[in-house]
Each structure stands twice: as C-alpha cells, then as structure tokens.
Length: 100
Image (cartoon, rainbow, N blue to C red; front, side, top):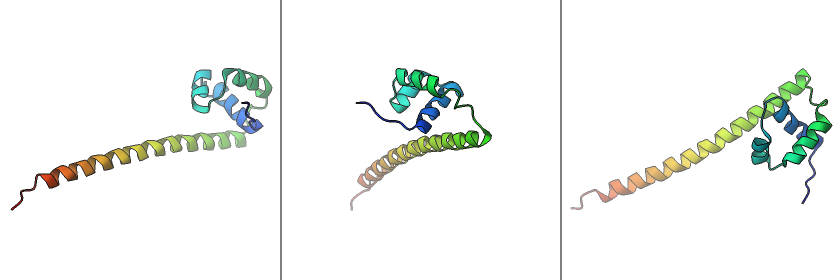
C-alpha cells in the first residue's frame, strides 16, 4: 500500500541522506521508506533542500528532538529493568528473614 508523505517529510529524508550522510539502509530501517522512494525524492528535492539559516535551525531542533526521544525511550527501558531487579531483591531479602 502506498503512503502519501508531505513534501516537508520528503525533504527531511533527503537532508538526512545529503547532509548527514545517512545511508539508504539506515533511513529505510528507521523510517520504513524504500530506497527507490529516497532516490526519487533526492531527485525531486535536492535543490529545495539547500537550507536557509532558519531551515537549518528548524532541522537541528527536529534532529535534537528525535535524539532526545530515543534517549528517553532507552531511559524508560532502563528504569523498568531496574524496578524489576529491585522487586526481585526485595522478595529475596524478605525470604531470608528468620521466622521466630
């Protein structure tokens, strides 16, 4: 099934490839976009993706937000793991208490 992406999203993908040097494989894995689509969008939007200073700031903000989102997800996973470990340790310590 074909998806309709906004021109802004397509330009973002082109910038990831052109400016950051991200590979087709990397972009495909992260966004689920085919290599063919990325190549087509590069042809369509290469000139449009030359950034003004405002575009650069917006892009950098979007990139930082994505980084923080990934970091937040990892921290949530770590917290969940640590909570499980803590509960497990509590159960073990309760079991080892002598009964009088």
